[in-house]
Image (cartoon, rainbow, N blue to C red; front, side, top):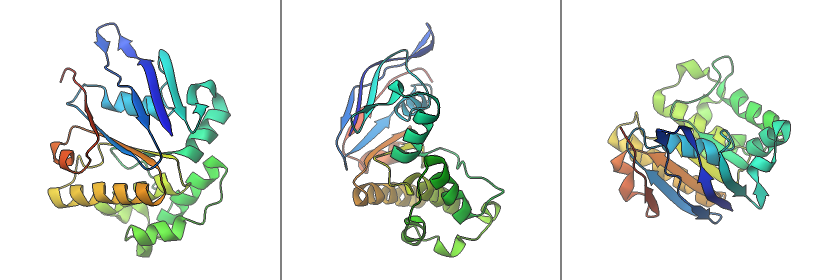
Length: 210
């Protein structure tokens, strides 16, 4: 479902990142763990079609992601890749339900998953709420719902537990795993959070300067 091979990337010759080879099937999970400055977010952005590598290839569902450009790449990403950023990227001008509908719109999709996802994630009663009224945990769940609403083939999560206490960190990772299994999506979490190490068996540790 997801392959990354021969990937090379650096911002300058003094800041080169170790980019691992990745080969995940549908429903499989991977934890990429490393300290600050190791390139975790850079790797996630490359896998998510947000940052073109200098060389190499990212393949999702037999499509070479960086063979696509412009609107085709945007639509492919919206339909096939669900990204959960470290800080929830949800629009304050829209309520919870409208944020999910916007994700449908950008992917050119019409989803019947909005209400089921909100119920599964325990935030259905917040569907008409302004996002500014949400707690941090609720906003994180909206981000998860938005990432899943187009039934993506790949879910990418960037430091999803960084600002959460132990209990909520465990809950969020378990939610991500449950949803990925339910929708048979490949799941990759990148983090420096050592608490996550016991929650996902398949792991890659990368180095780098802090």
